[in-house]
Length: 160
Image (cartoon, rainbow, N blue to C red; front, side, top):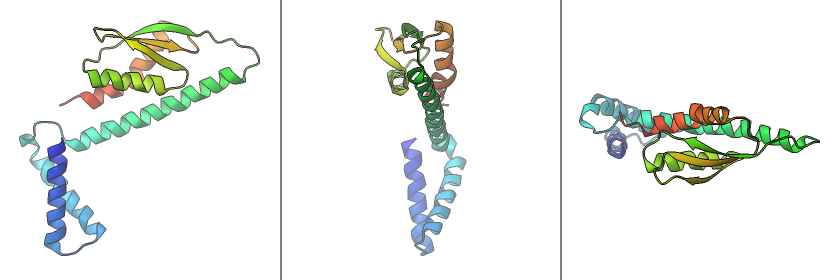
């Protein structure tokens, strides 16, 4: 991926100097031409096109912010109630992620979401131990994480 970005930037800078017009619009045009060339030559690069990876990263950020807003609203509901009715609990989340960076990223995103915190990861890296401030059922909690955060973390980690 890094080589693709470097090739694209070099082509954009070459375009920039060859045309003799040193404007931002000309650099953007050169960058687009470089991107088209990188797309045409993608078979010689070992990984997927970097624009796809950047799109997946932006998608991850958007999904995380949506989950962050929903979790903040849930915590506000808990805090503003007259009577405490929430049921905090610990649960074990079984993950299908394989690489360490994906597991760490998922754990960090869970911890950054208000109302949940990751307490640890099992030695075999298949279980994440989570504390939740308002627990419903293990199935609901795991489905919520698996369908949103783990799904987009897995998409970012795919190489093809």
